[in-house]
Length: 129
Image (cartoon, rainbow, N blue to C red; front, side, top):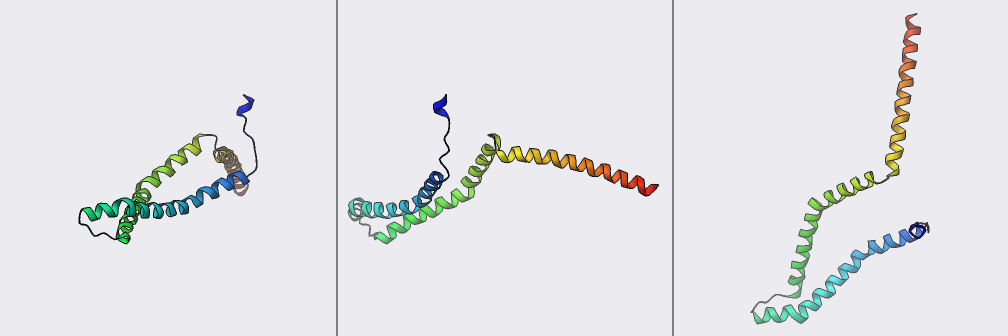
């Protein structure tokens, strides 16, 4: 399946995508303010007036921001640890080069320890004689 073979295009494309993802939060914040202003002006302010509620835009936005802060707390407290735990498992299971390198280092470390033990025995024998 030659068409499935991956192509290396350099890291510029990955960097471009990563930067796009990183700035998405700012675009989303701008969208939230614009959508909230539109929703308040076209829908909520009329509904508030019809129900004799005097809720200014700043209070409306404050409630939205407070809701976002609560969601951020829940994400930080519960979701992020689970997310990173999941990704750690996935990275470890699927041909992680660090895992392969660690296995080689452990093997080398075991061989070095065995060599050191042999040297210590030789030194101890020489000291006894």
